[in-house]
Each structure stands twice: as C-alpha cells, then as structure tokens.
Length: 132
Image (cartoon, rainbow, N blue to C red; front, side):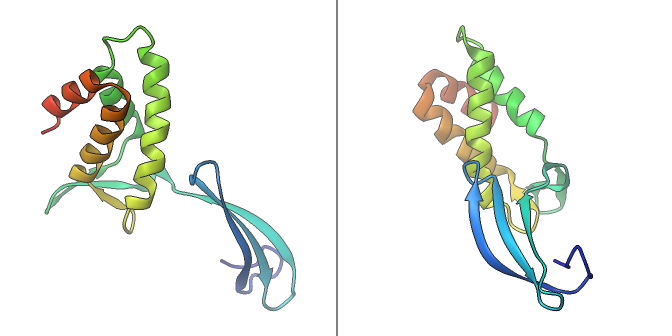
C-alpha cells in the first residue's frame, strides 16, 4: 500500500483481526515521510468469483448464499433471522477459503452443509438434497 500523504511505500507495524475475521485492522508507517495511519481491510464480495467447473466462473453472490440457506430453513418460525445469522457465520468460514479472489463451488456447499448440520439437521438435509 502507498502512503496517503506522500505516495511512497508503507510497512505494516501492527495488525489485528476484527469482526470475527471479516476485517483486518493495520497500523502502517510510511518508509519515506514516517507518517503513521490506520487501515481497515476486508474482502470485496462483489469482486469474488465462484468456480463451478474448470472453465466456468461466475460472480460470488452473498444474496444467493442467503437465499439458499433461507430456503433450507423455511420450516422454522424464525427462518429469516436464523438465515441472516447463519449467512454471517458461513461467510466468516468462507473468507479464509478464497484463493486469489475465487472459491470452488464444492467448498461453499461443504461449509454451508456443515454449518447447517450443527444448527438444524432437517435444514442440512434439505440443503444437501438441492446442492449435490
């Protein structure tokens, strides 16, 4: 990253994970002007790609992830709130799996299935039936 004051290169002097691993807080020091500033970094979901097959890429959609989880939880009275929380939980597990901005479809299915299995066996079974 470049310095916000002079445009030179910076070095990271301190780094911490925030918000369940969804953000990284970094203290940076400019190598030239010695200015100190802080950055908050996170994965840009709109730029992430999902690999469906060797030659088939499509944009990753958190909305589609939410809808597939919600669809599996429709039998619950609290489906909307549960789906929102489970989507957040699943996202924190997916972020470390992204490699150079992409993720395999099967990795998504495996992580969602295991998350749902711990929460609601019926929902996990429903999800697995529609995401072989």
